[in-house]
Length: 257
Image 1 (cartoon, helix red, strand yellow):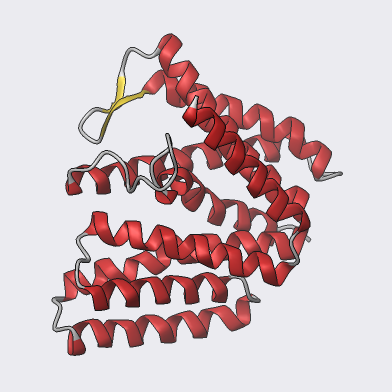
Image 2: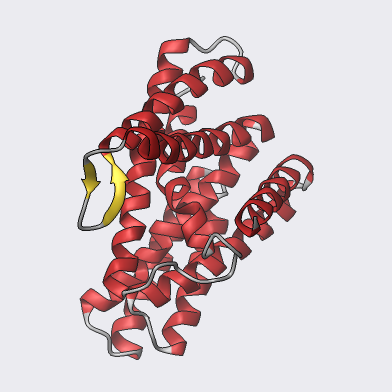
């Protein structure tokens, strides 16, 4: 019951923010979510020093804000941030390149996709943004129920033993059908086949995002990224698929006239 109640509350809060918040306020809220996810990422990826954790959170927030800006502005800004961050990690904190790269990766993993989510909203409106979120939710739900009903073969037994090939197939099919049906109503004039292919791509990369975060948690020896959300774990646990799916969705809409 706790999981259901908190899930409904999260969904309603997300819909309300996307539909009614002004764009600037939505950017600020998204950056706050990015910071919460960044601190969880720091815990599961071994970024333990307080200074490094603060720097990680700041850089993820800056990347989130920058990727919500026009493309011509975002690329030089983010490149400069990454180079400056690497210099600080290596020269000031005396970290090895591998450890520094793991911290810097947080900006690309968390900050950039959440910034692109805001960019989708700025470019195409709240209905298109909700279409992406709904497709990810439909795919995740279909994976769960298809896996429970038909799951026999493990998809990635070492990383996530409960995920099955049958569940993944159910998620991909559900995402394709949902995107084709709902997308054709939100995006008037878009052909059904490209939308179905987009749904397939979102489901596949979403599964990869889920497995990626599961791998981080397994290496850290934890079940959830945090206990922030009752019954659901942490922020990173809730947005792992979305982080991988958003860039694909954004690129699709950048290609549209």
